[in-house]
Every structure is written in structure tokens, then in C-alpha cells.
Length: 458
Image 1 (tube, rainbow, N blue to C red):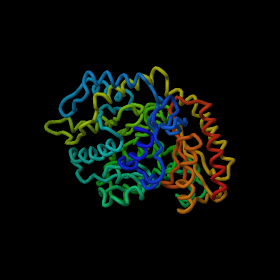
Image 2 (cartoon, one colour):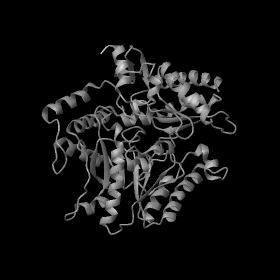
Image 3 (tube, rainbow, N blue to C red):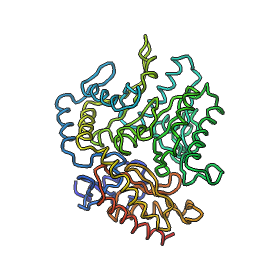
Image 4 (cartoon, rainbow, N blue to C red):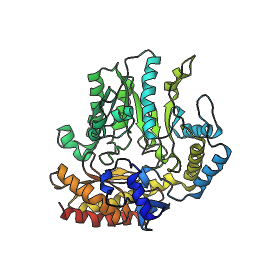
């Protein structure tokens, strides 16, 4: 198609995800045609720094020929076969490798095609597990405010973003919310001024215990938490949070699910993010970076203890996906993980995360920047209209600033990232894991220029 034909067809026929389609009635749809390393290129040939790794996905960078070749080779040999009572070598080998990377006794791998399906799988599995072990009333789940866990009906119920859910209610009952770990907003969240980070972490974990007790420990099956919460702008866990949460889950026989759809596979500098924060969950959900986006796949990784009753007698898990553990995706994932090992991508993140943080923290001198937070190569910059009071924007200001100006202005300036107001307004950054100081500087300089102009528009 010509560029003009593409623009017309994009509006006429392509229904884009989470997109106001009316915005493109009289405007061309930004169309990305290729990528190389940490850069992407649009249909007009303009280059952009990919500050979001696509969608927290392209860990190894764009244009990796070996990953494309892995897909090509596998498609020639075995393009498809389901995992419904059968196996194929690529799924076997990938499951073995994921079990090797996972902590503790998380040795059973149930493949999906994406992160939302992995979360959906984890909740269904938790419900059935407790029925099999004689605790059939345990079916509820606890998650955190503003957290995003996916769009299938079960996963969406676990999600803590009201605007993401309101059009699809009623959702699956039994999903309950507790405060998130945004230390920048700790005073308003707790109502207790001046807590230390560790005090705040223990307080947040104890809110999970309070919810379990309120609902009844004999009814709560699982707690879903991201190692660093995405929505709201990259909330890292305060010291002691996960240690206390693990104690609570053990005390009340509640499964701890580490939702690592974004945080796994190097985003924080470890293969699984729970290792970064020294806790062992009962279940890990993951996807995105497993293939660096070169083919879709996801997984729910389960401890031997939780899997045990499913392996007895006539018991089984009546759940699955046609394309779960797809041979081509599995082959690409294996090639991607080999690349991780060979190029030391996790260590690269650990070696450079301090430089990324310190470069972004230079933006704190801007009046519009309230907080810079995150971990590894995963950061959020919270925007405010008054640094002294931490006052945030009202709905009209968010509409004008984020959607009306920032997103397009950053893209026009050559930086693809995310301006988001699910929770407080933030700019999110998660570049490919191959970047270094030159890209950090480019991100900071572009943000400085655009955020300075944004402040004049308030």
C-alpha cells in the first residue's frame, strides 16, 4: 500500500487497542515500519528512540536476525501442534529452562499466549487447587489499587483501575483491593504523616492481612502483586514489604502470585524479578520479554506443592489455549534466552541502572516533576502542578496536558514513551535492555524540553 492508502485503511479497518479512534478521523495514524536496536522508524522515515521497548517487551532490541531465523527454522520443521495431551520439543525445553530460572520449587510451567491469559490461568488454578485440597470456599483474590493485571474478565477483575473496568461490569466477583506502595503519596495513603519507607512497606503489607481477615481467611485464595507496580508509574516495593507479605500468605494459607508480565526477563536486571527483591512466590505469571516480542507467548509457573494435587489420580486442570506454548514462539523464546546469557543483558541492566536513575533524577529541578521512581530499566516520572503540596492535576488539566499535548509532543520530539494518568499523571520509561548512557542522555534531554513547554501550558 502507498502511505496514503495505509492511512485511510488504518482508520477504516484497523481498530487499535486502547485508542480513541476519533482522533484519527482527519489525522494520519502513526505507522511504525521497522526497528533497529533501540530505535524505531515510521512510514515517513523518521527515527525515534524506543523509550518503552514497544510495550515493555523488546528487551533485546529491534532487528535481531537470529530471533527471526529461529522462527523461520521452527516454522519449517513444525509450525503448530497443541499442548492438549501432547508435547513438542520446544515447549519441553523452554519449560525446563524457565523452571531452572525460577526460584524455589516453581517447576511446573503452563503456557499461554500472553500476560492476561497467564493471570487468568493463575486465578483459575488457585480456585481449583483449594477445591482439590478440601478448602472449596477459598476463591477470592486480593490485589492493589491502580494495578493492571490484564483485560480478560478474571484478570480485569483483579485489575485495580476503575476506568479500565467500568464498561465491562459486572465482572468476576471476589476480587478485593488494598493500597499500593507509592511512597511518594504515603502520607495521603496511610493518613499517618512521616512514615519511613520500611514503616510504610510493613503498613502496606498489613493492609493485605486486614483484607484477608475482613473477607475471612477461609475464603481468600490468592494475592496478586507486581514486583514493581506498573500502573500509577512504577511503584517499587518498600523495604520489608515482600518479606511481610510472604509471612501473611503463609499464615493464612493464601497463594502469593508474583505478576511479572512486565518485570521478568531482565527489566529489573534479573531473569525473574522476585529474585531482585528476595522472595519466593507460589506462582509467577510472565510473558512480554520472554521472546523480546518477536513472537507471542506467556506462562504461569507453579510450585510443585501447588501442582501436586493436579498430578494425582483422575485430577486435571480443565483449562488451556490453542496457541499456548506455540512451537514457533517457544523456539524464539529459547533463542532469546540464549541471547540473554551470551550478551549478559541482565548484568548490563544491573551495571547501568544507577546511571539511568541518576540521569532521570536530573529532571527533578523542573517545577512539573514531583517524583522519579522505579528500578532497573523501568521508571516512572510523576508530574505535579505544585511540588510543595504534591498537588496533582484535575481531570481537565490531565486531558489537556497528557492526551492533548504530552504524548504527541514527546513522539514528535523523537521519543516514544508513555504519558499516562491511570492514577496520578506520569511519564513511563522502559527502554530496550541494550541501551546505555547516550540513550539515557537523549531521553533526559527530550523530556526536559517537552516538560518545560508543558509547564507553560498549565
